[in-house]
Length: 191
Image (cartoon, rainbow, N blue to C red; front, side):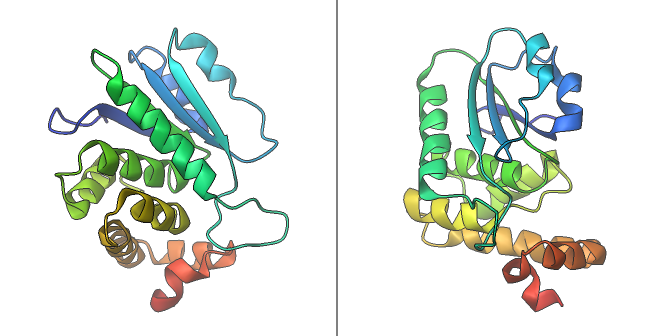
């Protein structure tokens, strides 16, 4: 599913296994978020010409041994990529992916939309990301960093926390999973 014309650009969110499905979609820009040390996906060889930013960090929200958390420099890089994309003429077709297309990619897309369309409220942006990617559970640390950088006054954090609540009700097993992978801060209120 792709975004409607009301958003500042067309976007798709997916995980690594889904990348081949989008090779003929006319993607102009790719934001690729991978774990450190993970091999580059082969699928991009079939995409044709596109601008691509690759970021490497773990899907973490608090420091844990052996994990590299999202840092302000990562969020600044993705926002710079978004600014550069929006400055280019013509139609933009953005694909954002991480390993599963659930957390880092949905957080990144939320931030890119918030930056590109400051007139759209955070709840509407989050609703659009969730419409495109039904299993969206944005990485809270990325949102916290980006909300501050974009001067959104905590509204992006509130919208993402509302999404977490919605998903906790819809998929209670996801709460236990997130708690088990070090994401307790996102789910404490639901345990």
